[in-house]
Length: 112
Image (cartoon, rainbow, N blue to C red):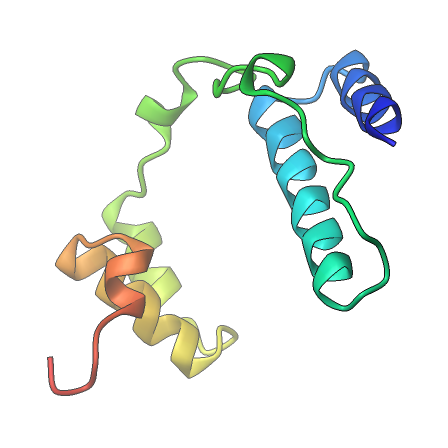
C-alpha cells in the first residue's frame, strides 16, 4: 500500500538520514517492486510517491563535497595497493588518471 511507503519515507526522515540516502532507499525499494511485477508476484507498485513527497537531493552536510578530494599519496596507494583486486585498481587508475566518471569508464572497450 502506498500509505506504507509514505510511512517508510517518514520513518527514514525521522532517523535524520541524509536526504540522498532516503531517496536511494526509496528508489531501491521501487526497483524491487518493479521486479516483483515483472515476475508476476504482485500487480502494482506501491512506490508511487511524487517528487515533492521525497526530500530534495541534498547532502546531510552541505559543502563536504568540496573537501572530498584525494591527494597524490592517496591516489598512489589506491591504484598500487596489492590488497585491492587488480580489476578494481585498473578501474580506479582509469578514473583518477583520465578524469572520467564511472559511467564513462564502464562504457569503454579495451580498444579505446
